[in-house]
Structures are given as structure tokens and as C-alpha cells.
Amino acid sequence: MESTQKQGGAGDGLACSVRGLVRTYPGSRGRPGRRSRPTPPVRANDGIDLDIRRGELFGILGPNGAGKSTLVRQLTGLLRPDAGSIDLLGHDLVRHPERAARLVGYLGQESSALDELTVALAAETTGRLRGLDAAAARTARDAVLDELGLGPIAARPLKRLSGGQRRLACFAAALVGPRPVLVLDEPTTGMDPVARRAVWAAVDRRRTEYGATVLLVTHNVIEAETVLDRVAVLDRGRVIACDTPVGLRSLVEGEVRLDLVWRLEPPGELACVAALRPLAEVAGRRWTLRLPQDRARAVVAEITGGPAFEALDDFTLAMPSLEDVYLALGGSGEGLVKL
Ligand SMILES: Nc1ncnc2c1ncn2[C@@H]1O[C@H](COP(=O)(O)OP(=O)(O)OP(=O)(O)O)[C@@H](O)[C@H]1O
Image: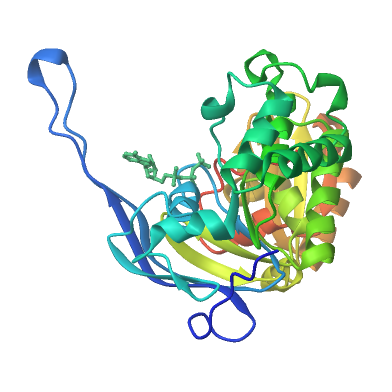
């Protein structure tokens, strides 16, 4: 692959360095006659600092609307920041956003640009757009379709595929014509477990073969915990934490999560249940409590050993997850998904 590294810029060992990134979407004035109300401006990125190391599988985790896509659209040169700097492999992307195309293989959330093409043509066309000659694009197309098990649907247009199949086809296209940085915005949305595994195996192969740096956007906490080297947690346009998944979980060490699922109404007349109510996050019949380990054990003993047990459908005790970290850091939790 052509060398894309320049001297200087992001420090040694860094693929990407972001400082003070701000992006505000303008509000609208609204049209009184057309029932559209004015909307205020949205500060989608509010002073983001990030350092991503070369070869890292780095994640951006956050709920809907946290500003993840806005951030990656700036990192891929598709959106200009209002303020701040982005250094990608020694290139100043704020001054030269067009250079991102040579550096980044980007899988965005939308696939509409490729929808009319067949799976095979989408992959081949991406290769051609990235500078491969016709023969090389066909070879790369065949290799990636084979790698991801897309051969049987290669001749079908993307618009006639299921959501998960279309996503996998777009992922395949993003891999044709290798780039030193892969930016994947929720790549596995809608995919079944087989397709998910194929995606992570393909990502691993690019890291092993040519040291690709991978930036993954997700709001899936399970995926974040299992595949990422490090993760930045985004909330309302700000990075509220950045560490390895294990390091982040240690922020809530000593705590466990207790889920109580009641058959019908919880028996609030019992003192032990009434005492838990103010501590619980309630979702229908499920109460979620985050408690120190000793306290959780005592609560379980009390609930299961007394009359409250009759009213209980199920209960689980679990070690803290990134979701718990996120909540402990003050995130809202809504919009984070567990698959
Ligand atoms: N083109 C736009 N015009 C106005 N506001 C926008 C625009 N795009 C995004 N926003 C707003 O900016 C904020 C951040 O949006 P963004 O799409 O970056 O979030 P996200 O974390 O990627 O969310 P999701 O997980 O739902 O994809 C949200 O409040 C969103 O409504």
C-alpha cells in the first residue's frame, strides 16, 4: 500500500489526534403558516479531545444523539468543524478534508448511494473510486465477497436485500482498496451473529495484515466490551471518559447490579421492598439496583428468604458493565442497547 504517513503531526504512535472539536448545527427560524416551529441550534460536539493509537480498535460509545456520527463525519472529511483541530496520520484534516478519502475506509450509517448497485458492483465500484485499475478492483471484489460469504447474493441489488445483508454488503465495499484507517459507524446494526462474527474476523485480519487502525462507533455496550481496545464514552457532545473497557469498569468496582423482576405489582407494603424502591431504576416490572456487593447479597437474602419471594418472578446479580459505568458517570442511559 502507498505510504500515507507524513512526518510530524499526530505524535509518535498516534494515528489520530483531535483537540477542542466543536460543531454546532444551526437552528431553523420556523414558518408560522406551515406549522413549523423554530428550533434552537444544536451543539453536537462540544470541545472533544481524543488520541487514537496506531493499530488500535478504538470505540466511541454513546446513546442516540450523543454526537458520535457528527464526530466521525468530521474525522472522515465530510463535515467541517466550527473550531478545533484533527490530525490524521500527520495530515491536517480541518485544512485539507479532501485528504481523508485517501486515508480512511468509511462505513457510514446510510447506504443510499450504493442502493441501485448489485453487491458485486458496489464493491468493485468502490475499488475503482479508490484508484484500483479494473483488474485489481475485480480481484479485490471477489476476495472480499468470498471472505464475507456474500457470493450467493453478489448479483442482487442492495435495495432488494434485508437490512443486515445490505449492511454487510456496504461493509464489504468499505474494505475494497485498503486504507490505513477504517471508520465504521455502527457496522453490525441488524446483522445476525454469523454476519457479526464475519465482520469482526475481517477487521482483525486488516489489523494483523497491515496494522489498520479502526474507529468503531457503537451504542451497543456488549459489543464495546468484547471487541474494543479502548473506548471513549460520549454524552451530549463531550467525552466523559476514555479508557480500556476493563479500566472503565474499575470505576464502578465493588458495585454489582441487581435486577428484580416482579410477577405483578411489587409488594410495597413489605418494609424491605419499600426501602429498595427509592434506589431502583424502574422499567415495567423490572427494578434495577446498583449496590455495593455486601449490600446486594444482604438484599438478595432478605428478598428470597421472606414473603417478598412469592411476588418475585426472577432476579439476577451481575458484575458491572459499561452501561453501569456510563450511568455512574452521569449519562442518561437511554438509547444504549444490549443485544
Ligand atoms: N443535520 C443536522 N441538523 C441539525 N441537527 C442535527 C443534524 N445532525 C444531527 N443533529 C443533532 O446533533 C446531535 C448529535 O447527532 P449525531 O447524529 O451526531 O448523534 P449520534 O450519537 O450519532 O446518534 P445516533 O446514535 O442516533 O446515530 C443530535 O441532537 C442530533 O439531533
